[in-house]
Length: 131
Image (cartoon, rainbow, N blue to C red; front, side):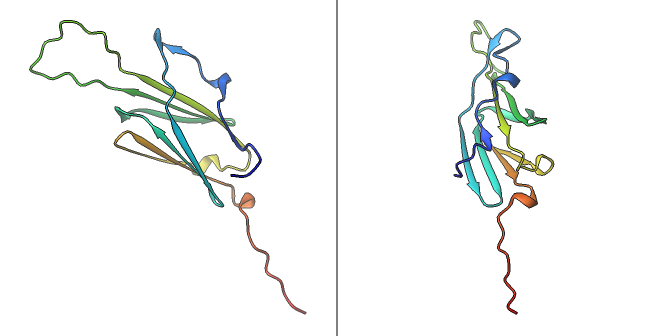
């Protein structure tokens, strides 16, 4: 990874600790970098596409998802202490990332975000003309 902190963790100002009186779980992430941008993988077990929100506001990328706990239809709940976890994590994006081109996919609880660099920030080779 480059020495500059283009994607920093966390953006505390954008993340509150509680919502609806319950705690927030910080999902584990892996971040990979190549010359075109970065790929962020976030572990969000039990979160469906419908319960996932990804927002970019100014320079903050925020991921928020709520897991759902399935209750078998043939059982009656007698005591319910389990709460569906609320996942939230925020990252500050450097100016070299193209916020308009971020793509996301969710498969079996694994969120994959592709965050490309703006074209001007991508490395390129300059051709040399003899003459």
